[in-house]
Image (cartoon, rainbow, N blue to C red; front, top):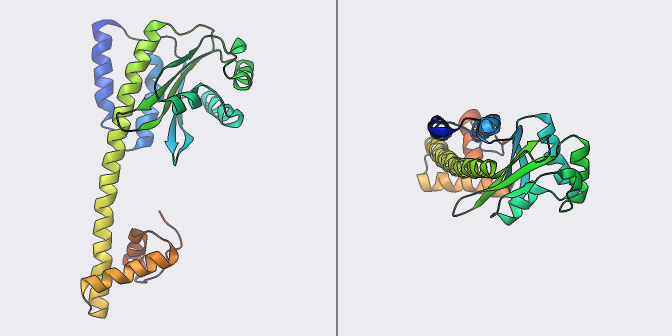
Length: 233
């Protein structure tokens, strides 16, 4: 961990760096990799994201952290899941061997050598994106300075993650518009019809096969066939 003015500058640089990551996976990998440098006491970290209203283990700094996420899913309890549901307060446990809030998870985690945990929700004003969990093998590894650093880290992570998703959605929308336009152009030229009619042909195949319109158009552009694509990527 780096403290003082130098630490503040490095944290600011780290935060800006999150916004340069092109993919969600790369962004979250950076978060879990750098957590131990930022949060006092942290040895490992993992991020769980909400996907279709269900938590998904998205990034982890070690296989042991991945195991922690799996245990919580199996037991349907634990600090990461609680942070996901509550979406508000930081959750801290100083010794999982005697922790009764999540008895099944805590017992199994302690047997694997994990004793301290900090879990925080990743949220913006509009949505709850998931949770960030920090782990340590030693009991009482975290203190108020850990909580402060983790809170800042979680806030910056949530903002960067939200911005990354917004950019990805916009990029996909533009790509979809382009490929659908290409498909319409092919049908207009092939059948000598109006663009509106060509669009309706694409929509008909999309609805009949319950396949997104952009996949139908991409398949047409790639193969020349107005049919249901075998795969959707």
